[in-house]
Image 1 (cartoon, helix red, strand yellow):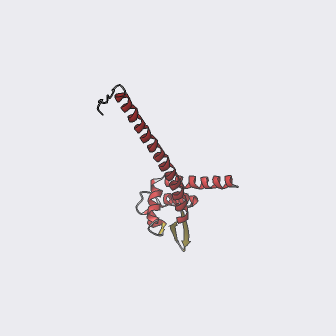
Image 2 (cartoon, rainbow, N blue to C red):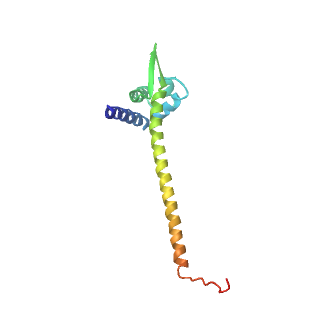
Image 3 (cartoon, helix red, strand yellow):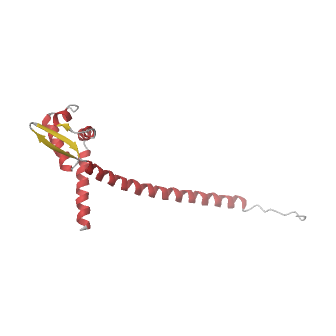
Length: 136
């Protein structure tokens, strides 16, 4: 059951990142973060035909990032915050994992550097003998 959930989540994330891989679709998502917009409004800044915009929107809808509703002759699209949170959570988990790994690496390197400096001091001062004055 857990494996099935992980596979479903992985497929959903794959679709989301695939959808976000295209610059035109990212422009649409960026616009939708400011609020709902019609298909024609989303098409304005893009140098492509309306049918091409609709195809891009279908990819975004299939990924779960965008949902749309038709009222009369106007199709209005809006962002799906839950899907964005899922992608954000996945990215955050990896960021935390890598920050911890890099912190451990930094601590290890600092420890190695300190140990190396300690060995260098022993080597430099190892042949020097310090004599005590008899009156001390």
